[in-house]
Amino acid sequence: MQLYQNQTIQIYNSLSGKKEKFQPIEAGYVGMYVCGPTVYSNVHLGNVRTFMSFDMIYRYLKHLGFKVRYVRNITDAGHLENDADAGEDKITKKARLEQIEPMEVVQRYTVDFHNILNTLNFLPPSIEPTATGHIIEQIELIKTIIDNGFAYEVNGSVYFDVHKFNESNEYGKLSKRKLEDLIHNTRALEGQSDKKNPQDFALWKKAEPQHIMRWPSPWSDGFPGWHLECTAMSTKYLGDNFDIHGGGMDLKFPHHECEIAQSEAAKGVSPVNYWMHANMLQLNGQRMSKTTGNTVNPDELLSGNNKFFSKAYSPSVIRFFNAQSSYRSVLDLTDDGLLASEKGFYRLMDAIHSLDDLQAGSISTFNVSEWKQKCYDAMNDDFNSPILIAHLFEAVKVVNQIKDNKASLTSEDLDVLKQTMNAFTFDVLGLINTSQSEAGTEKLSGAVELLIQLRQEARANKDFALSDKIRDELAAKGIQLNDGKDGTTFSL
Image (cartoon, rainbow, N blue to C red; front, side, top):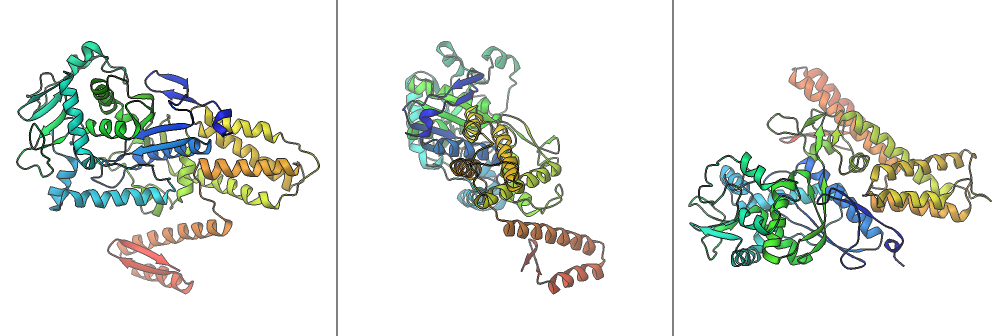
């Protein structure tokens, strides 16, 4: 018997606005689609938070014994600058500015995306399709939507007719927006004069002469709309109706709203049973923004090479920090918060590493069976990782009491405690089992990074005597500084 047969999961469904009992379409199987990155720049830390939340959800479903097909796409074409139908393709713009091929941009930032996620101990998805790899499917989908009367072609571009769709369906039901309000609040945008109505969105755009990325179609040489790719790929690999669709809160409108409309127009059925949205990540109480400079990349957070944090933080500390907040809550990234998470993480690791050395007693003074179910109850309640962590620290307290001879567990209960703590800490939360020696190495790394920063400040102030002293003293301790064009690194 699989674990899921004895557990009942409640998921907050963005479509209904309430928690619902999770009942997969096919018993024992889960189809989950999550909107992946547009690979025109280094992956944003806010996006990493979303992907990390769904990595934890994926891990828990697998832990319960579900066979999960997890599809997370790569957007490598069609995503215009303003997330609508005007402006330049983000990847094409980057390629033009750097005078390289668009697929060079795609390759560079796809590799960066994978490297960051590997470092943060993500499980790879079952399938990672690309928009450019599914042009044929997108063209066929457009043909079906046109044949069903919900799209029209103008001057080589094809647009989805939102008003026509709304006559028989409900456009805006996910984001709780009424078409009448959208009409009232819509302003005319340059480049949208071909549309019947400003609310209509592009399924296919005719490529202008300067547009690098283009494909032949029945309507023109052009490229698919951004919203279309996810409908084409999700339904190809998960079916016309599947279990879970996830993404960031910012994608609810218009992206996910348009996905629903496209699927219903083409297939006649609602595509997804449970819509899940992860909330935003703030930095020091403010929205992350490249324009204001209030932003930090994942690699900068991992290396400590940034202006916001006092030190580098390990992948597990970052994961632990993320799990201390519900995926549906706004999370504020601060140095104090990360420092506290680091202390909590190593406290948890110390307890887990002590488990093998604990001596079993003749009686149990702690109800392990009840505690174990509370861990499952936390994750069953819309994947409530903060409550799960609270229960894990309840076990940490018991471990420390046993070490001090103030509590005891039978051999059987000790085994259950150990198995459960390991399963939820490493398999579900995805933390890395860090030993005390490894923890010491990480602390050494943080100390050296601080000295490197002080040395850089000394050099900037032309205090070369102090700069040389830091370098030479570290060298005497067996720590070699290496100055390069990308900054200073060290080796032992």
